[in-house]
Amino acid sequence: MIQRIGTVNLKGKVYDSLKKYIISLNIYLKETDFHLDERQLSLKLGVSRTPIREAIARLEQEGIVKTIPRRGVFVNRKTKKDLIEIVSVWAGLEGYAAHLIIKNSTQEEIKKLEKFCQYKKENVLSELENYSRDNILFHQFIMKLTKVDLMSHILESQLLHLQFLRKKFIIESKRAIKSIDEHDEIIKSLLSGNATRAEKTLRNHALGLVKRIEEKLRK
View 1 (cartoon, one colour):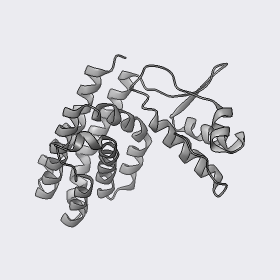
View 2 (cartoon, helix red, strand yellow):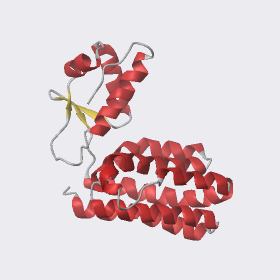
View 3 (tube, one colour):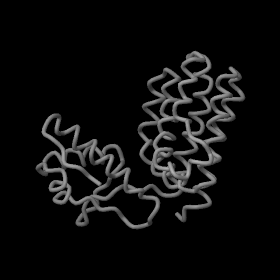
């Protein structure tokens, strides 16, 4: 659902609204192309086409959408190979992040990860939408704990596709339950101060997503 917006900070609001709308599409759940119609978006948001075009141009620069001549603007769905590369790089980054977190963050700061892990296995099936959201916030906060801005910036550049994938696979109940255990183990490993253990835990958690891409996505 895309909502109408006011006129204050119009460019930023249109961009944010379009990005949230694209995330809600779950583009990897179906193999159909997702077309963005300027006219329809203009009507739904209650703004002229100019800020729509500006937002689309920004999204295109970020690789989130693409323009196909004589067809229009479409959400840019990565290939299976692209996604495996993105997640593999992310796994390496999170592994390295473990060393930075143990070096740069306090135990109290690391414990703040627990606020994203307040889910019980027996209830997670009824809270999958919220769990999916907090799952992404958990990994964003991991990068924040490194206290290296570049780490967060690199993650943000590919975060949209990671969100799509997490949403797709978190729907699988067994995966959600396993993820709860893995997040608990990540926090414990970081609090232990053992960088080697924490690196392995974080890296393996991310690489589990590679395995699911290989098994579940066709191309």
